[in-house]
Length: 91
Image 1: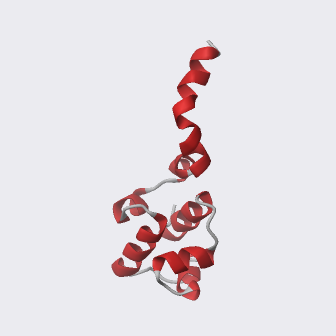
Image 2: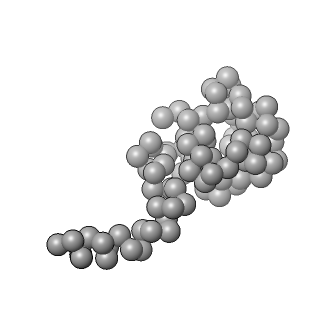
């Protein structure tokens, strides 16, 4: 998964529009568009801004894989404490 893909997937998992993430990250919407579409590789400073806007660390952003994006989803985070109960009641 490329950095652009990871950013897009995390943004979507947090139900943010590109404009909302750009605003939170304090970068232009156009700049975010170019990063997500892999037009160019973002600088470390831009990655720091985007990771702050997504509320994740830069290292997390750089090492994220596609299966982990699902676990970042806000709905999944909310129901995670109940998953153990569901598993034990079905046994």
